Image 1 (cartoon, rainbow, N blue to C red):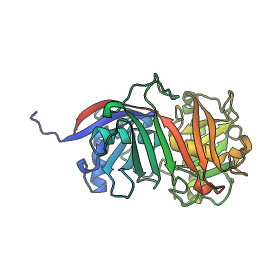
Image 2: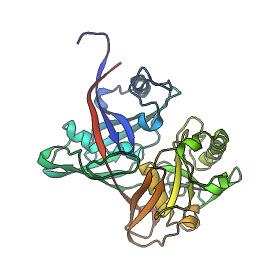
Image 3: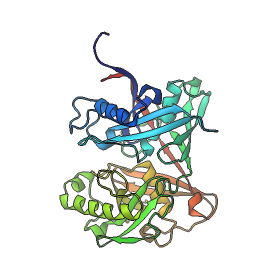
Length: 356
């Protein structure tokens, strides 16, 4: 093929409830500014249609994973997450994405970065963005990745093969403490809020305090201009108190509205990216929700009080797309030692080269 375009190896995955492009670290520029500029060009940003790139024109379908063989003891792969903006020339490398994480081990197997076992393969991943370590168990009958299966997750049509993920070192990854303001709740712009940093910095508020029922659809929420103005006001105050600086132009801290569930779940949530309402829930935020239910004094505990005991616990979280099961394990009764467990699915959509 003869042309003046640069070719870069790329795999596209539907990973959890997100979709993104996966690259080998060595295939991208080392300089951060050059790397981010290239990623924006590949995705077609900034442009709300992303007509000149491979982005999905929404934040949850425009994500990037950068993978390398890890030099860390006991770790197979290093995972770096990038969130390209759609409307601005910004590639944010501060947050993480537990959904995009789901396909990292499968990518490593497909690319020959890790050894594959018969029946199932365990891959240990280091999240560069947060410092968390994740063990993934991938189904690999006949030493090949199995994508077809019978497991369903809310927000994704059809069924696929389950990928189990076990998370360690998930508290304080961005701020240094699971209660980043030092309080179990604060008042921001007149609204009572709990700020947590457990896999992802998230601000939680009650639906009623935002003038909502908590059962609105993402489309209904996205149409409420005044709601997003209020969210940004709260995010700005909270971000500074969490030690993250100004929230302007940043996707963290994330924002979530919680309420009592309608079904058999423990708690109901509406999660924000934060520019739009998420169709389901980020994996990382799920650990915040689940763990917060065990912290007396938080608004999560008020809505869903759980007794903190050593051992495994399952929290059922109601989302616009259905109920998600999030597991947390407490090796001790110290919240900072909490571990997370979830099961997701992924599907390889395309493998080849992207041109820029």
